[in-house]
Length: 327
Image (cartoon, rainbow, N blue to C red; front, side):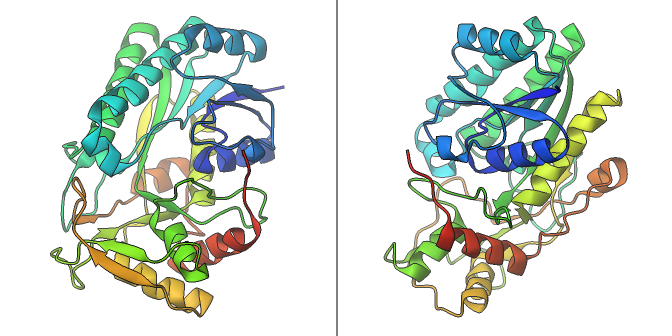
């Protein structure tokens, strides 16, 4: 059987990736410390609990399963936290990734798919980002992800580690079959926070900043459906297995939605108002971040078919009303 080690496979994106890998004929082996992940989300292959900083544990997992590739999602990813506790992000995201990469090379696992972020670009307003856009991250989250990209390039030069890097912004939606979905405690992502406000499990959504230089004053982001996103990761894995070499791909729709536009779309889907208040800007937030994906479309044949706002909210709303995990 063809095993793939999925770090963070008990998390939101990682669990969807595991489902997509199983559907594509692979056996996903989840490696997760369950700090933010949920064991209930591990449904599509074996589970190995462990931390990325634990080299001995990683070596044992590689020896047991002999994966053909690593799909690396495990990371801290909150902008506000990254601004206030940068050391946490450098230690976990960079230090943990370095240990993982060293373990993979030592085990002879030379195909590596990395979940990076368009936050490595920083703020480039009124442009559609592509892979050549200068990387000027605004916070330790984006900087830590850029550092891991650099490590991968160095390990390719030194050891021949083949890798695909995916950079993307906001991920939304859920498995339309309802097997896995988005479940954070606490929740910080815009769409599930809105859904919690709608159903009364939180008092209200706070709009962080209403004085941005955008048509309605709220910041603009690109959104990709989680199922489209993980499909790209599977295509990236096949790209490496076909011997096509290391590459970087942006994943986006080329369009963005403001916070107010997402609120309006949520109201339209749920037929309910979104209780909300206004608050100050969050440190490290950019005004407008939108990414294109022409390289992924042309080289991988990727198409974000489910990545329209209505579909993303409908799938998230279905999961929100029916799905949950328990520790």
